[in-house]
Image 1 (cartoon, rainbow, N blue to C red):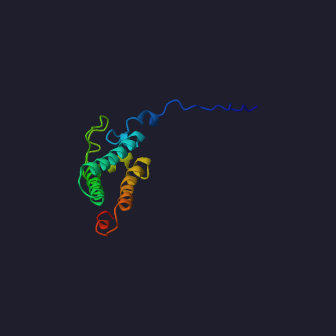
Image 2 (cartoon, rainbow, N blue to C red; image 1 turned 180 degrees about the vertical axis):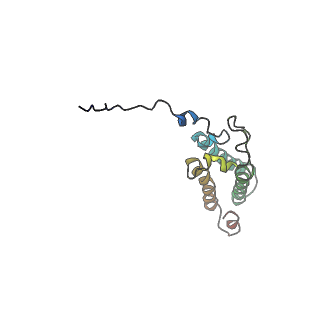
Image 3 (cartoon, helix red, strand yellow; image 1 turned 120 degrees about the vertical axis):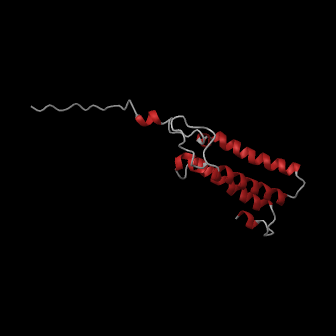
Length: 144
């Protein structure tokens, strides 16, 4: 007589991937996926816009041009020009030294929520710029 093997389901109790999950996060970019960073980033852009309008004695079109230009310049330098990061990964030293912030973000995975947000902000600024600025054609080509 042949005995049937009992139908035992094994539970996964130890996971190498789960153990290493905390080790693979990049300390230089891990905060970008947090919605509180999205709120802070948006608040900084909005408050800088309000403060520029209150402090600078220029027209609205000049101020929106300045905001777009400064945002583009800062994000280009910080996201796409500077390499490495201020925080060294203790488990993988010098792993991120030759990568820009954008390349480090989400381990180069495309279309993550953090990357979508960082792509949305310049597009929203571009739309606000064209909504609040009269279309004279001079400033349009600067940000296209």
